[in-house]
Image (cartoon, rainbow, N blue to C red; front, side):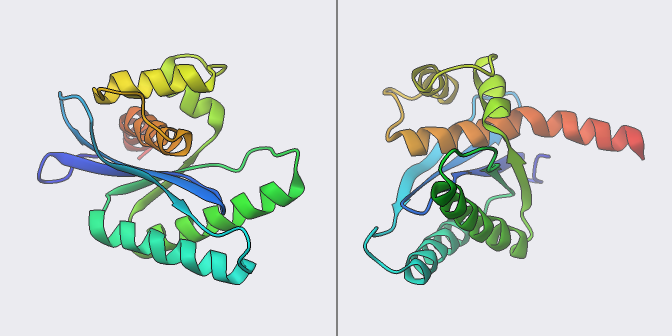
Length: 174
């Protein structure tokens, strides 16, 4: 999992069309992960869908090109009561998955419960518990905000927790 430099860089993405959270986290074996960048990509709600998707793609490409992550961890569209919301999250997720894969990144998806369990130890953790654990795990002075960026950081941390196990399992199967 670790690059030749000894550092692995993970981009966490909490997909959404109106608000897409992202967090870039570096990890070095034996050290606390480091938050490199966190934020939210916003698209105007009054713009046409193709224009919003194009804007989201431009921003995602910019982040991928600037930070060159080894892996991209994306929240899996698991369940949404609102079909319209589910569609827009799915469209945003598709853009991220495609652009990351086209750059040769390892691309993984995790359910919200997998993320909560990996970061807090409980699949039923609430937003406040998640933000607090992200703060602790990344050594941040303040709670990470906005919530979309904190969720993206949690996705990156989830991948850092799961990846070594996945690699050992894959090696055992070979």
